[in-house]
Image 1: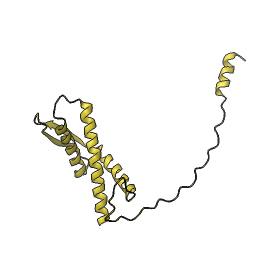
Image 2: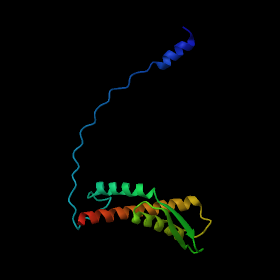
Image 3: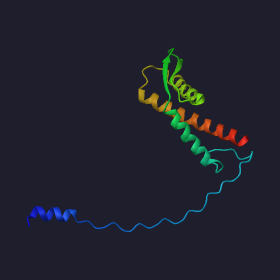
Image 4: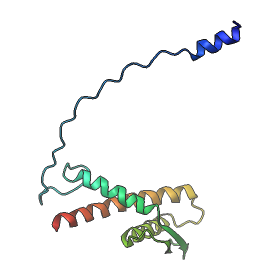
Length: 142
């Protein structure tokens, strides 16, 4: 056998992986009932699963929205037009509001695009969380 063949055989020979140990069973998640003195929120155990699900749904819708942002003044004025809707008017509105808020925060046209993008994403994330909390509170009130 040639050295090349031996090297190929040696490389092909592998040690089998260790057997997979099953993970221990997890205790069931118990959600306390909502009460007026314990509001919904990420820092409270009440409704965190629902909040997370709602945020994921809103984030998916947010990816569908396309807007056109036009700066109208050097002092941070802007108009926003929805070019492609998410199908959810509140998501479309929060997208425009987030973009306009960032124009007001960074009125200089020379602001780097990365700064504006980061600002807009942060504003959108904050507003999505607020909208998710509002919708869950409305569901609980029904």
